[in-house]
Amino acid sequence: GSINKWDYSLLASIFETEGFSASSEPGQEDDDDYENAVLQGNLAYNLNQNARISTFITRQKSTFDFDNPVNSFGRSENVLWGLRGDFVLLDEALTLKPQISLTDSENISSGSSVSTTEGRSINVFLDSEYRLSEMWTLYGGVDYQEDDAKADDYENTRDKISGFLQVGYAADEVLFLTLGGRFDDNSDFGDKATWRATANYVFEETKTRIFGTYGTGFRAPTLAEQFGTFGGFAIINP
Image (cartoon, rainbow, N blue to C red):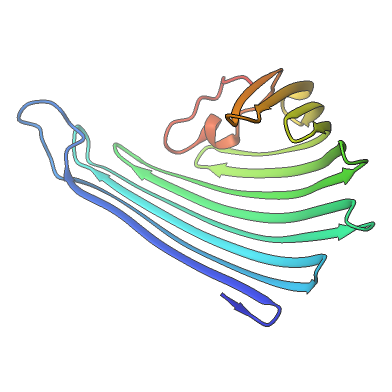
């Protein structure tokens, strides 16, 4: 909804299953259940036609209960809060989108033993777009993230900083080309440079689209993927 210069939204959802069996062994069928609840809110204020500030929060909680082969129970809870800006400058040639977010998480699982993992992630991001001409556009951004995780027998902090730059070309709304590069510096896995090129052509008569992309990529595992409550792999590589 909207009130004067304010925009707002609220979303709530619950997904629940019960009466299914996680065991397929004859004679060992059981009554298992899973539940996931999400509550999300957004509030934005329009300073003027070219400036907007918004805040958002999301709370997600899920639980499961499996009886066989070992009575297992798990609970996961995540809270995400963020602040975002949208600014159009220089006669609408430059667009800036800064954002900061904080995520707190807790995961508990029990089977033959009880295990707990807590984590916090801070992310600061800036995305920009600059229109050089009718056909050429320059895209760029920086991203900083710091992760903290603590388990029963483990505690670690990891940070990374990334930057990307991409140039785009558009001709007569039928040909679109991009070429870009990205640099990632991870405190645990070192630095890596990657690149990507794309081509997109639209046949005007039929609106058929041909798209192709080629490049390289890099993604380091998260702390949860390596040491998470629900089964991590400490030796996993990027």
